[in-house]
Amino acid sequence: MSACLNQIVFLLSIVLMIIKIAATDVCDICSCFEYEIDTYVISCKSYKNHVLEIDFEEIEWPPNENQSHMKAFFNNFPVNLLPKISGDSNVISINFDDNNIRTIASSPFEHFNNLEEISLANNRIADLTKDFLKSQTNLRLLNLSNNTLSAIDPNIIAHLNELREINLSHNFLTKITADFLEATEHVEVIRLENNKLYVIDNAFDKINYSLRELFLAHNHFTVITSAMFEKLTNLEVIDLSDNKILNIDNEAFTKLTALKLLDLSFNSIKRITIKLPNSLQLLSINNNNLNSWPLLNVPENLTELEIQDNSLDYLFPTDKNVPSLIRLDASTNLLHQLPEAQFINLEFLNLGFNLLKAVPHNINEKAPFLKELILDGNEISDIEFTEATTLVSISLCNLTSLHKINAYALQNLSGKNLTFDQLETCVAVKIAYNENLVEIEPDAFYGVRFCDLDLSYNSLQTIPQNLTNWEMIENGVNLQGNPLLCSCEQEWILEDIMKTLYDNEDHQELLLELRCENPEELKGKRLVQFLKHDDPFCKGTYESEPVLQSGIGRFLPNLLPISEDSSQTGKKIEFHLTPWTPGFIIIVTLCTIILILIIIVGVKWQRDQNLKLARRNRLYYDDY
Ligand SMILES: *[C@@H]1O[C@H](CO)[C@@H](O)[C@H](O)[C@H]1NC(C)=O
Ligand SMILES: *[C@@H]1O[C@H](CO)[C@@H](O)[C@H](O)[C@H]1NC(C)=O
Ligand SMILES: *[C@@H]1O[C@H](CO)[C@@H](O)[C@H](O)[C@H]1NC(C)=O
Ligand SMILES: *[C@@H]1O[C@H](CO)[C@@H](O)[C@H](O)[C@H]1NC(C)=O
Ligand SMILES: *[C@@H]1O[C@H](CO)[C@@H](O)[C@H](O)[C@H]1NC(C)=O
Ligand SMILES: *[C@@H]1O[C@H](CO)[C@@H](O)[C@H](O)[C@H]1NC(C)=O
Ligand SMILES: *[C@@H]1O[C@H](CO)[C@@H](O)[C@H](O)[C@H]1NC(C)=O
Ligand SMILES: *[C@@H]1O[C@H](CO)[C@@H](O)[C@H](O)[C@H]1NC(C)=O
Ligand SMILES: *[C@@H]1O[C@H](CO)[C@@H](O)[C@H](O)[C@H]1NC(C)=O
Ligand SMILES: *[C@@H]1O[C@H](CO)[C@@H](O)[C@H](O)[C@H]1NC(C)=O
Image 1: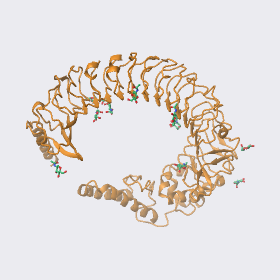
Image 2 (image 1 turned 90 degrees about the vertical axis):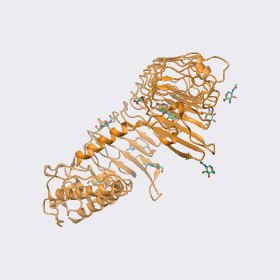
Image 3 (image 1 turned 60 degrees about the vertical axis):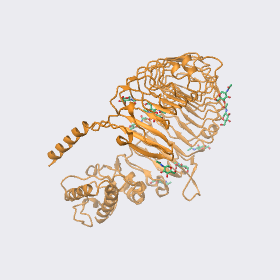
Image 4 (image 1 turned 30 degrees about the horizontal axis):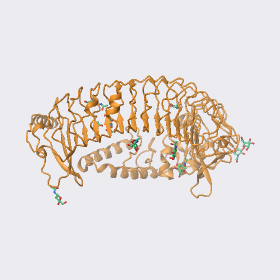
């Protein structure tokens, strides 16, 4: 049966492969449809098993009584030559992406006189003929991305006064010449990422360059001189990420008074001191080798600084005030402390993976509006807030020196977010992945109102019952991944924490990796299995038969009766079964039936079935 099917499929594909269509009306071969009011799309795409053949020189464009605009796509044709195409003045966009074009005929688009977009991306064009764009006075966008161009003759584009965007990414260009810049004086966006560029020539004087965005990522720049961008004074975005930059002239960007975004990330910069225009809003200089502070000034409008993954041991050494900064990522450096400056508007601060030995002092004095503080991966051995500190959230993860959280550790910490009843504020605290954290003193969280408490993946065996008022933590408690001791003293966790989590579907996923480590006979078991037992740990009732037999054996081992957030439809329900128990057989049988249903009902089935499964699991669970 299936062999037979295979043969049919095979024969069909052969038949399709040898289909050769050479009709002239393009809509006989391709799909033509109205895309928007007044815009008609003609889409001609070949597929592996269905290779179209079109005589581009003889294309008959569809009759177009309303003079609608047409956008034409011819993709995946195995053509080496782009010939002179028969044209139509209503075509405003033509796309020859993903063909195999190496050679371009003389003036291929001569018969079109209203083209606004030409795209020839993903071909193998190494040379452009001089008259390639001769009659294209309306051209706004040119996409030559992913070809094999090693130079562009400026004369090809110099006459295109309407050209606004060029995509030359993924080619082999090595230089941006002054002639090229002159020829593109009206262009606003030039994409040149993934070339082999290492130099930009001095642009000519007395030209009003319109260039606003210049993308130069993944090239071969090693030095940025002050002449490179000097005349391009309308630049707003420069992306120089992923080059090999070692040095930058102090004045390289100074004249760019419209510059908003500068990306220097993923280079090899060790030591620079650059002056930046006050207009700059975002500076990314992360993932370099900086070992000294790179900025001569802090731009007035700088709102975001990414300086993570360097080797800095201080930040803002000479600045008393950093008024505009809202987000600062200085993680993975060699910092020992919070910088001395005033961060009037700072909301996000990541100081993770530095060399801090304690929670920084006077956080709110330095950054009164700070919301989110990340101190992960530091050398903090003692969590202590030495004065009143107000935050939305704090993260204290991957602290290998942290063994214990002492009494009143968070006493001075309060929140900025409102509780559901809007009467109090609460704070989100994450103290997770601290592999040596074995103890939290009972009074450690005294005085804190949590919105969220994440204590997952520490090395806690026991949790003090009166650590906090568990039921008041509105967004749930995460205790997963700790080596919990399932003893009588810890039985309260079932009642005080797990019931609440279980009753809130949004929090059920927090039960998934909540497992006993000890005693030995319970090792690896999910705590959720014991939820409906009567004093399971104190009376040992987990060893007796379940109170209600549901015909599926003792409690289904490892069955987790939860659906992860069923409000997000389409999500899978996770549960685990040990093979060859009666429950397993039942489930397998049901699955087989369901599989047959899949074939009948099709794709729409998935959603309904997820809901059904969730309900059924709940039933089984509640039965024993
Ligand atoms: C031309 O426009 C008229 C009115 O807007 C419409 O009824 C007609 O279907 C259009 N013809 C074509 C070929 O799109
Ligand atoms: C470039 O085009 C080739 C096919 O011509 C394709 O396989 C490759 O993925 C493209 N690369 C990019 C970056 O688009
Ligand atoms: C090239 O640009 C055109 C026009 O914006 C676009 O339709 C096409 O998807 C682009 N091609 C690639 C590979 O980005
Ligand atoms: C430019 O080309 C690159 C690579 O093909 C593509 O990822 C990008 O989307 C293109 N951009 C535009 C605006 O067409
Ligand atoms: C330069 O061009 C911009 C925008 O194209 C225009 O606003 C500005 O007035 C021009 N400046 C000069 C000196 O021509
Ligand atoms: C800083 O931003 C403000 C508000 O966006 C703007 O008015 C001002 O011109 C900018 N300053 C500079 C130097 O660009
Ligand atoms: C809380 O802050 C006060 C000063 O505001 C300080 O005296 C006290 O020691 C702090 N408490 C803790 C537990 O650090
Ligand atoms: C934090 O610790 C966890 C567990 O040890 C580890 O998987 C993770 O990679 C660590 N994070 C970082 C950024 O080192
Ligand atoms: C705090 O409140 C903001 C705004 O309502 C919300 O987006 C954010 O998720 C809350 N944060 C926490 C930790 O609850
Ligand atoms: C918590 O319980 C311990 C002993 O179980 C007790 O010493 C401590 O005073 C209690 N703390 C609070 C805040 O109730």
